[in-house]
Length: 273
DNA sequence: CAATTTACCTGGGTGC
DNA sequence: TGCACCCAGGTAAATT
Image (cartoon, rainbow, N blue to C red; front, top):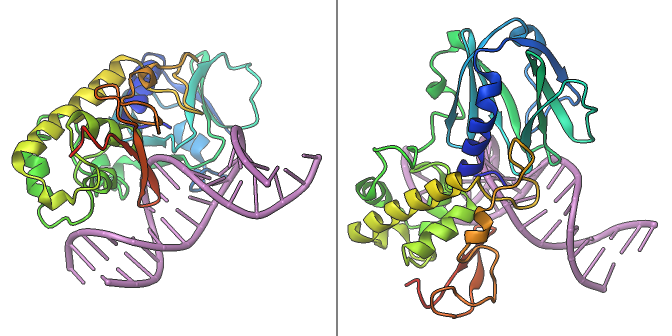
């Protein structure tokens, strides 16, 4: 499922095909995904030129002079750049033709989103879905101090607090488990009981894991495919995720799987204290 | 009131 | 072949 690295890999993949090009057509094959598609999206976009692309958390941003298109891949979405005459498949719900190519969004489970934020509604960071997000994990503001400061008074487990996204964004289920393993922190520990020293280590491993995953083209589990149709291979680097019962790569102890907040967590009971 | 928990959306995969 | 069930990310509602 697309987490921050997959979204960033997607952004880098589509950006050269989008930036500086003009939208010539929009095709919708469904009424919407998580939310209805914006009304008159074709009218809004056709004839307008894409100025740049960006990303906020797991939201892919396509900037125009008059507003920003927000694309969220949900858990099963992906984007491809294709020749416009490519026949659409069952779950290809959204096409945006740019120049002589088409940006096509497929999302079988339709947990994703395509939204429009007009410039006259204010800066994109004020968007209802973006304004409550935590800091970007790869930007300078995010460090051990930041984690420590914002976890005082948080009694939930560190795993769930990472996933919540209000302190730091983009750390989904896979990378939360992987980061905590590398930082040697037990995912069940209450966030407010973890000290500054361990948070410095955790911030560092979160940065490392995400940066590595981006370099390796993201992970491919189930539905995620990179823009060129090839899969990433970060999943080959997993230490704990989806390795229930398999020996820890460090100490050979069987990897344990537990449920926290209705989500699976994977960890090594020996390495992570 | 802020933090936390629960419910919800969808459809592919699994197991009976 | 069918079908109940599970799981996932992120939001909103409910609860503490």
